[in-house]
Structure formats: C-alpha cells, structure tokens
Amino acid sequence: MSVVDTGDLWWKTAIIYCLDVETYMDWNGDGTGDFDGLAHRLDYLAELGVTCIWLMPFYPTPGRDDGYDIVDFYGVDSRYGNFGDFVEVMRIAKARGLRVIVDLVINHTSDQHPWFVSARADRQSPFRDFYVWRDEPPLRQGEPVFPDQERSSWQLDQGTGQYYQHVFYKEQPDLNVVNPAVRDEIAKIIGFWVQLGVSGFRVDAVPFLLDTAGVSGGAGLPDPHQYLAALRSFLGRRVGDAALLGEVNLSREDQERFFGGAEGDELTMQFDFISMQNLYLSLARHDAAPLIAALQSRPQGSPDVQWANFVRNHDELTLDKLTDGERAEVFAAFGPEKRMQVYGRGLVRRLPPMLGGDQRRIRFVYSLLFSMPGTPVLFYGEEIGMGENLEREGRMAVRTPMQWNGGRNGGFSNAEGSPLIDAIVDGDFGPAKVNVENQLRDPDSLLSFIKKLIEQYRAAPELGWGTFELLAQPNPSVMAHTLAWDGGRVLMLHNFAEDPVETRISVPGLVPESSLRDLFTDETIEISGGADGYEVAVLLEGYGFRWLRNVLGGDVRRY
Ligand code: GLC
Image (cartoon, helix red, strand yellow):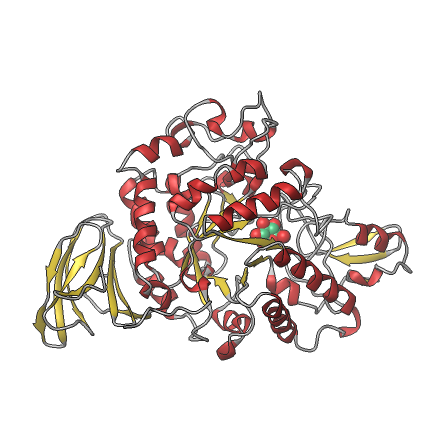
C-alpha cells in the first residue's frame, strides 16, 4: 500500500485565486475593500475549493499604477487596514488550508519611495545607485511598456540633470539590481513576508528586473540568471517549500531559462502567456490547432516546476506574441471597438462579454483551463462570470468590485458612494444579474460549475503531475489529450466548434477491459480494440467537452 507522495511541491497541483484587497470586500463601509472584508470572505474561498490566494499589491502607494508603485515594502496601505488585519487574514487562511502568495514588485519603486526621494535630491545621495542613471538616454531604446502614456523609458530629472530609467510609468523608477545593496534589500523584503507566513510570491515583471543593460558603462550583471537562482535559493533556505510564480511573457526559449533549464532552480512557476494568447486565437477560429501548437512548444524542463494557466488576469489580455494578422483576428472576434483595445496589443475585457455571455462557450473555456497540464489561476470574479466596465481607463476596466449580491453596491460595500462604487459594472454583467449569492443557490450556475471543475481537478493529480500527450484525431476543431500519472489516466476532449462532432480516437495506454467514465455525467464509455491500440468513439456537443477517466471495473483507487 502506498500513499501518493507529492512531496512538498504544492504548486504542482495548486488552484490559485488572484484578488485585490481593494476591490474584494469593504467591511468598514468606507467604500474601499479591506483586509477585514477579505477575512470575512475566506470561508467563501475555502468553500470554492481554491488552494492558494494571490494578493495583488496592498503596500502603501500613491496609486499611479494601482499599487504596483510602492513607497514602503514593509507596510500595509492604511486604506486596507493595518498589519493586525493582515496577520488575521494569514491566520484564518492557514486555518482553512489556504496558502497565500503576495505580489513582489522589485523591478521598481514609486518615485515617492524614500530611496528615490533621496536619490534624486542629490547625486551624492547614498541611494543614488539604487536606481539607474545616465547623462543621456541610450540611443537604442525598446518601446516603453505603456506606449500610450510614455514616449521613452528614460526621464530627465531636472534637479540633478541626469536621466533615470523606468520601463513602466515615469513615476516608477527602476531599481538597480547590479548594486549589491539593492539585492540585500530585496532579500530582506522576501525574508520579511515569508516570516509573516506567505508561501511565496508572484514576481512582477521578471525579465525587466533581470535586464541590467541600461546601467551605464555596460556594467550590468554578468549573469542575471545566476541572480534569479540565488534569490530562489535564498527563499528556499528561509522556507523550504516557498514558491516564485513569475511573470515572464517571453519566447519559449527564454521561459526555459527563467525556469533554470533542467535544474529548475529559478522560477518555480511561470504564467503560460503563449498558450493563453493562442487559446483566444483558437476560440476566434474555432480551430484547436493554435492552442495545440502552443502546448506542444512548452519546453521540457525540470519536473519540479509548473506552468500557471490562465484565461484572464488583472492586466490587458495581451496578444503581443501573435502575428499582426492573428491579433487582428482576435480583436475582430472579441474586441472590435477601439475602447476595448489598449497599447495596440491587448484587450481590456473579461471573458463572458467577449463570448457574448454564451454559457456553453464560457464553460468550455474554463473546462480547458482546468484540464490543461499545469496549475489553473483564476482572477476574482471569473468564477461568477463578471464582465468589465469599459468606462474605466485602460486596464482598470477589469478591476471592478467583486459582486457579492444583487443589493446595494453589489454587496461590496455599505458606503454611500466612492470612486470604486462608481466603478461597479452595469447592465447584463452587473451585480443585479451576476452575483455570488444567487449563484451559490443555483446548482446550474457558473459558480457551481467552476466548483465542480475545482473538485475534479483536485481529484485528478494527473493534471498537475501527469505526462501530457496530444492525441491525433480527424476533427480540426477538437483537442484531445491525455494525462497519465501514477497508474491513473484521464482523457480530455474539447470541441472548439459551434456544431457537434463525433470523433473516434485511438488512445494509447488504456487498460484492457477497462472503460472510460465521464467525470461530469457519470456516463460510461466502452472502449474497443482498434488497429493501434484501443479506440473510443465520442460525441462532443458544440463547444462540448468531456473529462474521461480510465477506470478498471474492480479498481477502487480511482474515481
Ligand atoms: C506587471 C503587472 C502590472 C504592472 C506592471 C508594473 O506587468 O502585472 O499590473 O503595471 O507589472 O509593475
């Protein structure tokens, strides 16, 4: 007898839920979400079944970049409560079996951070070298990340007559990690939060953090990846099973490097931006091929690292890795109006409005999300099918308050009014129609469906750990894949087309005299001997999906 041993690598089978304390739940009635509100919603999250919460930045901030501009790495912004409230959330989360990871934004600070205030006051400041300065901006510059807001990544500081680097907004000067004092500070920040019980970090803008080419005189880090490995190793020494979930929207080759190649000693997890973008292309074309190709292009790295799959996040739905023509197709299908697009590369919409509220198709997409090899990441509100508010500026469109019920302010706050309350979504996707309370009571709601997916994901360790194989079959609209691990095997089928298809698939590795059980309907599908192994014939509805587990009659281990 053996108990399945997944070691301490919890991120291999996690379900991550991203939320912003600011927009989640306002408990003190001031119109802004707070830690106390989140504390009161941890039961909801535990009940939903997610295993890890990712908290977007909650540190003191002037708010130029919605909290990604930090003035104190060791603080909690007073609008959300105080450290006591934070620790209380950590305590309750732990008691509910929920891990917490927090955003680690160390590529830059706010321009109001005391380091930068000092650095720009005087060239002799002890903090001058915490940032990246030049007499003249480099001749060759990449495009700024927010091209509609900034024309350059270098800003002249009038007072001291030099330019500082800022790959994001000019109010976010880049830290200089070539400076050992900065690296020490970063280690201290990491050490601080893990001491408070977090299980790791979502590391913001990793490639920019490691890009030290802007440092004058070519004095960048000789091997930036060595630095990332050192950070990971430091974290591991502090807390053995802490994880780094990195934001790396680069090519597969680069992503492999950010995992630390075969060693797997850099980032523990990376978002799969490439599959996410190709998922939308597949949706637009009703053709499984783009997503299949993206999944096939994943590098084979260390078995200990993990892909974080996602459908939407708090930023624009970036389509920067598609060709211009492909991007135009996705824009035409899901965001044809100018106000739905941003930076020339992305969409500021949530999934349900992009799919015209089509429940079949929305569920199809979440079925895919949970059945792709890796760890699924949800952005708050996805579980109930929230929409966006296109009246809000740029990426803020998708960062509207959580919709708890159909009452006043969507149950988010009791306040009379506040800028966030004004941001609450209107119309078909607003709280009157889309809210947690109604969906909790309805067994056919999206929320109930997502819960079911989570349950099945948790019962199928193959999804996080398994060997992934795409299966050949004749329908271009179908993706068929299996995941096998520790004697278990699941077969996943997804039909990107609007019309039903019948498909006959030969599935390697099926156990003779076994059958396939549909994990959602309980139906049993018989398998028959075919030329190349065992074959199954399956009917898929339009936008249909099947999760089939290979079961042996008498095997009580798998269900
Ligand atoms: C990341 C965040 C984004 C933020 C930027 C700068 O891309 O996801 O929201 O604006 O970093 O910190």
